[in-house]
Each structure stands twice: as structure tokens, then as C-alpha cells.
Length: 206
Image (cartoon, helix red, strand yellow):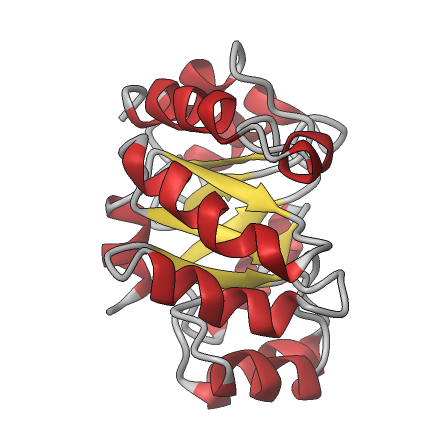
């Protein structure tokens, strides 16, 4: 899939941190049951790569990407584990080139117009805007729409369920990332019913 197809399939992309491998499969099933098609698993725990495969096995129709990708090794390991797409928190030039060379569908993270232009020059058409709220939020994205109309964003960072629809209404926003759908605490408790309900609410924002 191309990154444009992936973001088109998403409304809100859950940003997930799985600390225990046993939680990966039921988490994937709950998110899929709620109607979400695209999720981002963060590379922040020792079991993240194994959790990615477990989620894919448990919910084959779920498009599972790997986030918090920061190095060339992260790129290689994530793709070897089967990540459908890659997401980074930032976009250093050498990292952007490695990401472009990988050929993987990707959402490099940017926070400024200069970073967005640099990523666009290397062929990236969709970008993660991070951290969205601290970096200027809706007002900043509106300001970017005029000079950079061809770039689509997936804003992520301190976006709540209440704020998400306002972001999704912007012309240059394809989807948003949100951690409220399945927080670390909710995953650890195994509250799959609550997670499915949150996923359903998010899916209906499309």
C-alpha cells in the first residue's frame, strides 16, 4: 500500500504502547471490532516487534505500522517484523534519506514549515505533525495550508477525543493520531470493552 492509501483508510490512528506481549492480540481484536483499520504501535518496549506480529496475526485486516522509528536499524527491524508503514517523531536529513531509501510507506515527523519542505523535497507527501498541540495545533496547520497545499498531515500529540474532529475538518489533515483510544493503563488492565468503545467512537469521526 502507498501512504496515501493508508491515511485515507484512517480517521484516528491509535498510538499504542504495548508492554506485555500477551496484550497484543486482544488489543488488536478490540480495535478492529471497533471499526478501526489503521493503528500505530510504538517502538518503545522490549516486546514491540513481537507485539506487531501478534497484532497482525490476531486481526489480519488491521494495518499495523511501527512508530517511534528513529534510526536506520529501527527501520530495518520494523520492516523485518512486518510493519505496514513507519512513523517517526522527527525528521533529521540523514534519517529522512534512509526512510526514503527503504521504500516503505512512511509518516516522518515534522514540527515546522522548513522541516515539511525538506521532507517534501525527498518525496514524502504525507507527514506526521508532532507534537501537534504544543507546536501550534489547528492554527499552525491552517497557516501551512496556504503555502504548502500539496502536503497532507497526520497531527499527533496531546489531541483529545474532543479536539480530533476539529483537526479532521482541516483541508490539509488526512487523519489524526491519538493515545486516548487505548492508553497504557487501559491496555495493562485489559479493559478491551472500553477500548473497543473508544475505537468505535474514533472510527465514526471519519
